[in-house]
Image 1 (cartoon, rainbow, N blue to C red):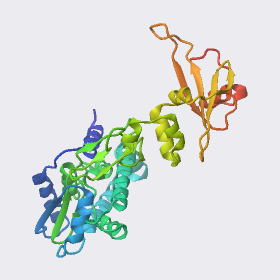
Image 2 (image 1 turned 180 degrees about the horizontal axis):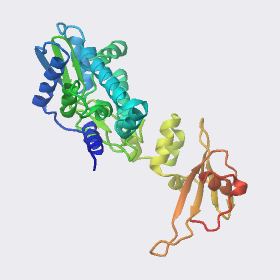
Image 3 (image 1 turned 90 degrees about the horizontal axis):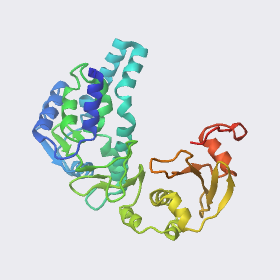
Image 4 (image 1 turned 90 degrees about the vertical axis):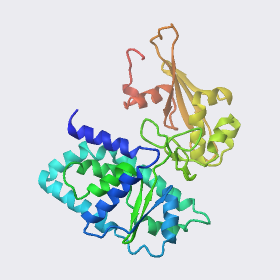
Length: 337
């Protein structure tokens, strides 16, 4: 495995790391970041159990001084990007980014946005309101969730060495003239195969102080949603007013099971399969094609598949053709598999 892949794998692991921070190593990284920026080290480093707790703590600090995020993170990052771009050229930089940071960008960006949204929508008596919290979040350095950019710059200069050291050992942090506030990492992180937050029996992302995010296949859901999933019925799914939550419920419950238990009737049957349609209130219909694999399993049985197709599909053949991205009049399979 080459050095680039090793670097990407290392930063992917850092971005997904959970458990207690290495506080000594992170604090050493904070001090190094200040020195590399030409600043005096902070006189105090405070810790918070989550980004939400950090925002509340920063709000209460009266002698922290101005934010030095620009000096510590923004300017060094811009200079490193410019230097690497000049060194590699436009095409070389594009290839380098594609091989490094781009591999981590979508998952880290999505996770960062979800945390920010959780802070802004979940404030309470001990945290700032959304407008003030939004301003305080502008001062944050993303720690482990800066992994995409740090993977791209890894081994190409030391201007960001302090920022990288904090990221390797802790979560988000807030640098000010006299005080730095650093977050612990999450205690739990659950994702699906696509890297999206995903859990059906608890929080998908959780911090030690109780700040948590709930999600199913990347979609935000209420904190009591896992309990609702445990007792789902076709009637409960039909009466859910939130269309997005209803789709999540359907996916969790299983389209085939919902069809079987809700008394649904097929709307078309041909040699390719059976087209079923589920009518849902205030939402588009769910259309599914039931197909049977013509090749038997090792035990002699024939496996049934359910294909989600566009809601305006009128025939099973049209639905199967759509899954192959060919016009229905051109779909002439010799063997169904």
